[in-house]
Image 1 (cartoon, helix red, strand yellow):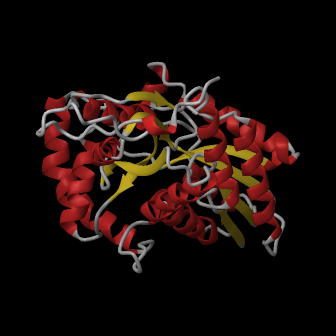
Image 2: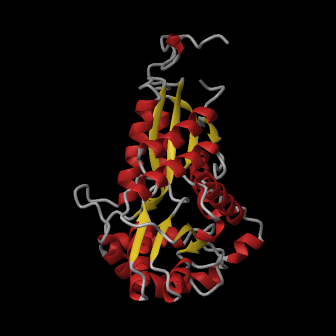
Image 3: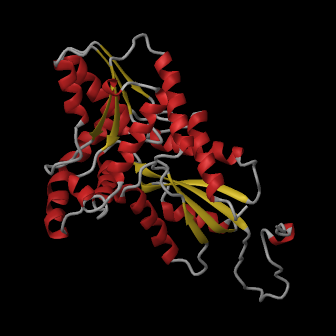
Length: 353
């Protein structure tokens, strides 16, 4: 295949253009890592702004507006920002004054850029679906740097409308405002990708070796969703179950030592079961003394892992008779974590580079 002439990469010949012709750089490829988001601060108003954007998303809350609007604006956004702000404060990166999800995603993007060889043709960036840096602002930034092709990389191993789809929706909204749209690709889910399963297994093996105890059971816990989303055709539940099975088999752990559960339920509707917190409590009450939790669905540790799993569920286990508890960290910006992102990106860039 003929290589693109280097002279065509960044800026066309402008000699014949009118003096006021807008700058139109092109020829670069953008890689945009997308994650959920984190509030800009832990006080009431930043938390309220973040929760309002998140809980107003019709992909996340599939309720009629007439029903959901008063519940959200008159009840939830009055009470919940203060409580969640305190939770975020327990995990906040005070040095950078940001949530850990932002710190880790930035590092993933920086490491990926280095692994792609520092190519002047490829620009790696990152964005959040909710709060900052916004998806629209980073797509605009990539275009301004001459990216006329952009690979969107939702950092969700398991496809769900409330995560992958809404991240893409936000990117597409930004594209709708552009006169000269870049060509776009979207990385598919990678829940059963051998690179992902192998990275999880290596990470777990390393972290299990650091413990001073042998767990009687290991729980693979995934973020939950309402059962009705599954019944409407969302593949998320099936993706999670397959990841859990493949990971257990890769680690050669007996089925009776491994459980798959779902966490972070919200509201009164039934969610995917079994619930993580109830399972942890039940295990402790029935005499289990040594327990390990791992959250394969999170590409980066955040509130739901650091505060909910390593905090709330640890207390549930210990308060009900458990003795030894550990939460194994997500892949994050570890070598294994960036291995996964790099492999997926290189595969999806084929034909562009």
